[in-house]
Length: 198
Image (tube, rainbow, N blue to C red; front, side, top):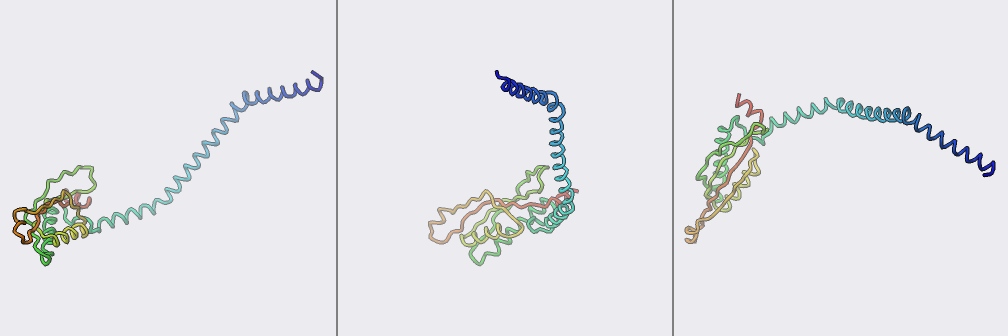
């Protein structure tokens, strides 16, 4: 090699050695841990800012929760009674009253009503009340009764719905009411259920 080329090669070799020495002796032992600690500190600062923001919003969140709890207590969506037995009796009477309100549209009679035993769990936030209902109704009042049950308050839910018409009576040609069976469910507020069990 020429003297100039050998000097350039020596300088390049020295640079490579110095860079390698830096990474082996300095960077991995001193600089890299500093970078890692800086990243951890940035993460901790971000976490601290998020917690500080959550703590600052705590009074507002508590106010909202109190408003929701008060709204739930005053809500007409729940059955007004304090225990399941009274609620079942009130629910059956409510269905009788709804059916009676539509007698002008044709006959609609409650022929049987009975409560369904509760299958609630301790983890359930509300206590469900269910009753079996049997009606003998013509079509127009039946539609009005079902509408009033599901669209009114307290909120009620119709399940296990079945309807049939007596084929023998239908042969007479006269309007024959339909036999209707379903279950109706509503819910008791948690606060009321706790009060009722105490």
